[in-house]
Length: 327
Image (cartoon, rainbow, N blue to C red):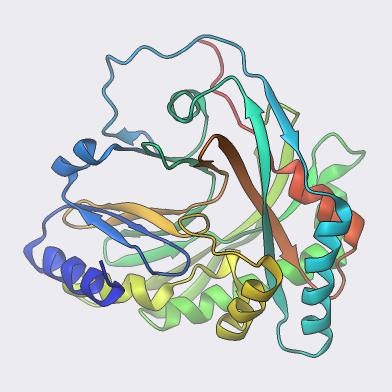
């Protein structure tokens, strides 16, 4: 479906107050929009903060997870990192999210990952990918639109980890930039933009140990009957700033040079319009089926203060599956 057709269909559903599911890839070349009734036939299952279309009678696997990452070499990563640093030095970007795939070996299928992963937002697309994202894209409620950009990560087991994270000049710069970008993005679709909470810490458990990440909460006021333009609103906010960078258009060009491949649905968005409101996520923490291989896609924000060793470590640190706690 062409992206313009996606926008028109979403607007039409919005005018009719008809619930729908949406999935938009990073390049906006293959968006999906479906009524909720058609999702299962397409092999699509979601769990958005506990709201799900996955049959509750399905039995969850109880086996233990085995996960091995076959990481790209640091020299391969360095090639793209240096392209990004050159662009940053020239002032063509201020923050760029650099990502790469890591081949993994695991005893879990994509569906088993969907069943067992613990995350606010989950999506399974049969024979394609599974996503278990901690990051909201936008939510609406009572004519307000809210986003929660997530930028800044540290290993929670490090000494004084939270203090290190909050004091890091690089992490501060990265977070300030993304908050400013998302404020400007929301201002294209809403009024009275306010940063309600700034740079608070989330604690996330992984099978390799806990990590800390910083987020902010930004809110704006939508016009009456904004639902009639729901597709247009989503389009204006894409791509998500937290997984592209600033300024967006030029930064996306640099991403394409450094990554040398399309991201597809990774770092796109997905969500539900329930007839009145949107709840949606950024498609990060993402495992893709590519023939016989499974690829775990991950990355992090690069600024002029970024160090190669730290950014390469973060790329690998994010290759994890946060499992549900045994009941």
